[in-house]
Length: 384
Picture 1 (cartoon, one colour):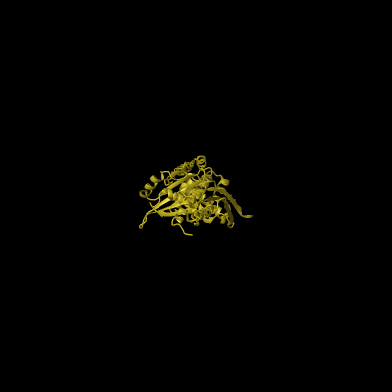
Picture 2 (cartoon, rainbow, N blue to C red):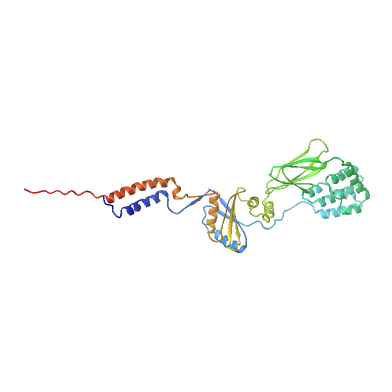
């Protein structure tokens, strides 16, 4: 049997189109999760990020794209807290004028507690001290003893204004110190956020929840704070005897403004830390966020990307800046983070091998038909 020179090319010509058509050998495609909205934020020098921003406005991704600005500018937060500087000045004036009801009215309430919760120890000491001075002048012994005991248990320093009041005020504090003879007691602190930082009486204690600190018997202001949460505080009384004190705090989710402030603090120290990126997603109110950071380099600028999904970093990548289009860069991150499904390579599809077998059989048949040469039979017929 003699092979025809066009047998193999013919077989391939017939089988290859069938193979590609059956396996979908056209251009690669990607599909995204239904209804996915991707927030994209750019960081880095404006000279590098501006071209990226203009190119990201172009379509080319199977999802909705939302460009967001980084929360770099502090946001003013409204507060109902009174002006304590003016309040203290008015209280001192009332004390000097012997207008004791006015003095006690100005310093009533939990203003010292709020000051301690915000870490303003000196301010809390001045608020309690001047209230004590007005109570001593008004001869309210019970209230004076309570505030003197609070100054001692909270370990607040006497302010410089101590020389401007009667000696009896300082004597009250000294008596409270002598009465506070009980040893320090344990206070267990916990919260519904992992590794929340603890402050007691306006001072950080160098521990994270859950932890135990030793404090003097009496009332104490416990504050707990964590990234992505709103700080919380509570006044807890520790008894001089009996079971240890315990406090459990619930921290609500942080507002976008607070999350932005927390992100700014962390980004200055660890911009690529997973907790920093989670805070940025919270500040931008984004379930799916990509942060693209342009990095100037002496050997060529780079573009670093991180994909955050539901507060967790699920993909990272880095490329030469300007090499791929931004859409390809984003698609790469989305595929790595399994938010976008790309087509598998041809050889990884089961249908590929089925078609290969079929194409091989077809090629064999075509080749056989092309090279087949029937035998020639010659018959001689001799006429008589």
